[in-house]
Image (cartoon, rainbow, N blue to C red; front, side):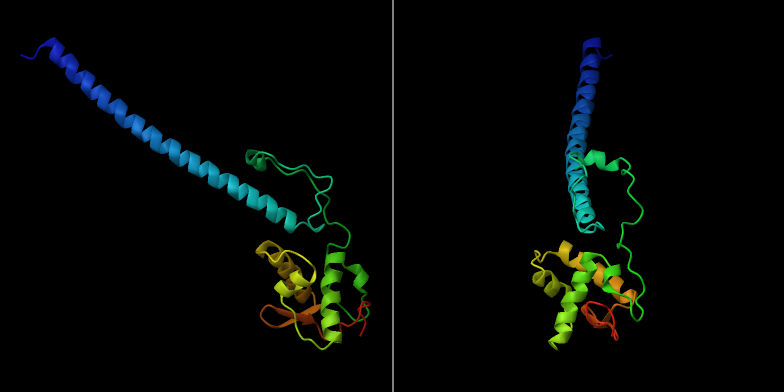
Length: 178
């Protein structure tokens, strides 16, 4: 028959092995949690940057509060006005003035009208970003591409070759008249 001290030592050894195993699992979970939190913070920062770039007011953050902690990003956003004046792109029709568009859209149209006037052909979004003095980074280029695609969909621009934009037939000059 085993001794009481021997049985206690066996139970103590088993308990120590279980504790060591749980500590290893806890360390692994802690490391995984730290990596997941880091990834979450990076995505929250990226989302805020995209929100700024794609904001209808062109990224103007005056009067908006910055979120310091990415955990605050889960909070519901403060209500904004529905659509800001000139942020909507109306369908183009003969005689519609460019002034119905926001400054950003007018800027795209002006660049393409200049190219058309000089017979220089279509313009890519990277070239537009460069012409506007922007950093040619994917966030800025994609914001311009979004605007250009919206103008194509509403009849202001044409995209005869993928990614190359020009004024649509009938759209000429800053007045928008042909």
